[in-house]
Image 1 (tube, rainbow, N blue to C red):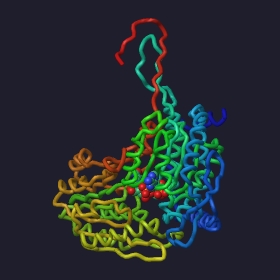
Image 2 (image 1 turned 120 degrees about the horizontal axis):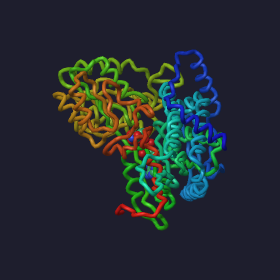
Image 3 (image 1 turned 60 degrees about the vertical axis):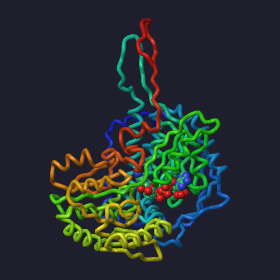
Image 4 (image 1 turned 180 degrees about the vertical axis):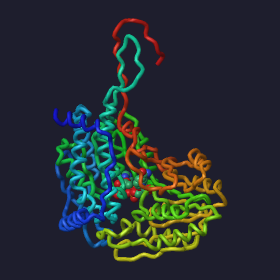
Length: 534
Ligand code: NDP
């Protein structure tokens, strides 16, 4: 352990650097990814248990994770946890917390560094699982894995920083100290759309801060979380620190959230589920000694605004990338393009042309840009929104879908009213609403006029407008002259306002504070007058 502590401390002194993305034009990377896809394919269709206190527990019943490109291809059969097993997992985490909370921060960070190294080694494999399980393209899958590595590298360093002497004011006659201690048991509930990055980020922030975890992965991406559990097991993380509880959120979610031994809930997902968690977590239950903390990151209806001074080519490229990367299934997706009327027709034409050039199909092939949407429910919801959109605007690209996988063409609907449903509600699919604004003021007003506030872009060359947008564009992540997606750990701390959540700023200096509580410790050294009122 001494060695682990020492090496974590020295590694933490090297500055954090984002992982480079793999260059798939290089033959050796292409070959490695193809090999990993072949290996993964040979492992499809197995059955996976729960992991509670390090023990593998088979499910009495299972559910199936399937390949959305080919829904008859089973990724795996996963245990459907019962409420009793959810309670057991919380109990295991509570027991593990009693020892884990005493493990030094450097040692906890050491596990995270070791896990990051192992994920680097298994990068192609993790990418392959995402390509199969959620239909990511090679590039999107690799960016997801890279972000997961970044989160571990970043939070390990952050924890070591938080464990150092904190800068408080010193006074005569007292030794004063502020330390960050863990909260307790966390229920970690991630979404499927960044099945590696967000799941790894919320889980690793939790346990590196000294908490223990019940990880309930999204039911459309349990395999990615299983791969992470394998890594944690391989680096020797003690049993019970992270427990793996697959099953339907609607069945076991309430039990987890309301359990009196759960201290906090870290959730990323839809607005409605986030609101429900917020409400349930606020209730007090017998035996519960704390106010539960909630870290809730929710939906978005993000906009890309273009004014008449913008580089229109770059703006159109940014709009298309923001709207259709990973089939529009990103919370940061630019699902609204708001264009001032002077350049509206020009930009729209470019957007249509670029959209029509996107490739959609077999994501096991490196050139494919778009794959399927994640499952039958998403497919149904998105195709219904396209029908609604046809009545709310002018369909100018896409609109169709193809089976047997859940493939929906990148769809552009123009001349949409800012208050139309497709301009206000999160569709979470490849559907772009294009809205005409009178001028920059009007565009900014439209951009802010939803209940969300996650990401936003402005394409403009006008410095004054850029300065105004810095103050008035009300989003957690604001971008100028670039797409609305693609936040980097450490560079763009991520989280939104309003119904987009609690603005946790994942991948930023404030994030780990959400997983800790601060304790001020004072020791009187000499007798004398003590000041202060509280
Ligand atoms: P959901 O809200 O449907 O699910 C998220 C997680 O919550 C899943 O693990 C799900 O489990 C679980 N869950 C579902 N119902 C309950 C319940 N009643 N109690 C407890 N847990 C429950 O979201 P999606 O997975 O579909 O993810 C897409 C959403 O996530 C979009 O709205 C997107 O904008 C948002 N998102 C936000 C981000 C941000 O940083 N703000 C980042 C990424 C995504 P199960 O799968 O079993 O139903």
